[in-house]
Structure formats: C-alpha cells, structure tokens
Length: 286
Image 1 (cartoon, rainbow, N blue to C red):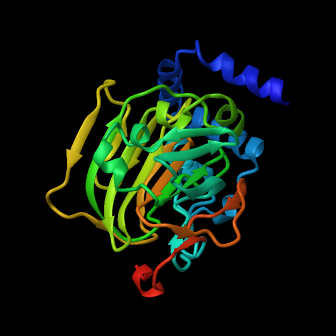
Image 2 (tube, one colour; image 1 turned 180 degrees about the vertical axis):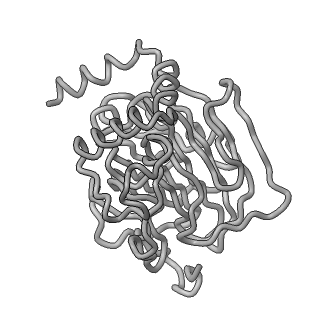
C-alpha cells in the first residue's frame, strides 16, 4: 500500500491541477437535465450517499451536479453539541497542540502555521501553544462548512497554490500539502481568542464559497487580503462556507483544547463536539 500511495502522490506533480479542476467544474455546473441527473445518480451509487438526510431527496430538483453536491440537510440532521464543534462531516485526520509553530499533517510530517496562514508571521504567532484540528471531507460527505464556535470575521486571506488531492495517501507523501494547495484563510475573533478556519482546495475542487462574499476561488493566482471593518458575526453551528467538490478544513485556535477521547482518523459529523477549551466552560457558550 505504501508503494501505491507514493506512486499516486508522485503522479500528481506533473498534472495540470487547475486546468483539470476547471474542466470538472464546468461539467459540475452544467444544467442539462439528462447530464446532471446521470452524474448525480452515478455519484450516489458510487459513494453510497445517504439522501434521506437531504432537504430534498428528489435529484430532479437540483439544478446542477454542484447544486446537489452542496445540498442542504434536513433541520434535525446535525444537532449542535457543546464546546467546540466539528465544522464539517468527514474524518478527523489530525489534531493536537501547535508546537514550535508546526501542525501535524500525517505521521512523520509537519507543516508551518505561518505558511498555512499565507506567510503572516504575526498572525501565526497568535496561535503558538494553541491547538489545531484537520477534518477531511470525503466525496460522500455533506460539503457545507459551519462555525466551530461563534466568531466575528476579522480578515480573509486568499492564498494561491497547487491543487493536490488531499486524501490520506497524498497527505502521507506530499510534504506541506495543506500549506501548498490553494486555500482560503478566514480569521475570526472569538471569546477564546483568534481562530483561523482554513478551507483548503484540492484536485477537482472547482470553487470555494463563503456566506459573506460568495464564490472566492478560483482567482487569478495572486494573493488577496481582505479586512472587514464592519463586523460580520457568525454563530456557532451556522454555515460559513462550502466546497464545490470536496476537500479539507484546517482550524487553528489560540488556546489549548481538550480533544476528549478522539483518535486520529476518526469519523466525525458537523456539529459533533470536537473539544473543550482548558478554561471555564462558561467561556465556550456560543
């Protein structure tokens, strides 16, 4: 398996990541009923998608494959737990303390918080000694991203980059994967101090959207830094963004968190309690 994973990772280096992703994005936005219904049916069968959770279980109601892929769920499908909650459905691939400015990518691999956050040394310094958690969204998962705790948006940083696949095989063999891929860094002020929610692009991810600015990626390949003078507060559990085709969310917290009994590569759902801060419980209430 290690040889196969390494070969899979190496084969991605010469591929035209952005061109392939934009082509897939064009197909995913096609509104031809015959084509989009065929794509949706094949996807549901291939990845065993549970449509009983979807607000609309009828695939004919979706205007395109992307409309289906970013489908909303029924109101009761994802109850919001206590403390810091998972922002998405997926696999909790890694979590822990940010040590010496480094986050764990996979066994034996770390990457720099400063690089992940777009090269901002001051921003990265605010997370020294804090915690991080990474959630990988597989194709079958719900692909909207929600707030782990309530926060007020301070700034948004678009960082151009490659679009390697972000599955476990690539994470094991591409150094600095999440700090190399195209990504959107959303920085919030919270009662727990600064929090960064990083939406990482990946191969065939046609776009990343936020609820406050609409579609952000793809851009022209130049960094963009946006500050928000007018407060935009997003409550815990509320939607903050979405992936048009799946990827990964990396969260950075200024304070240490207690991740309870979680283990790496556990399945997690949006709204499920991820961690508690090592401070009074009152500070974590929304």
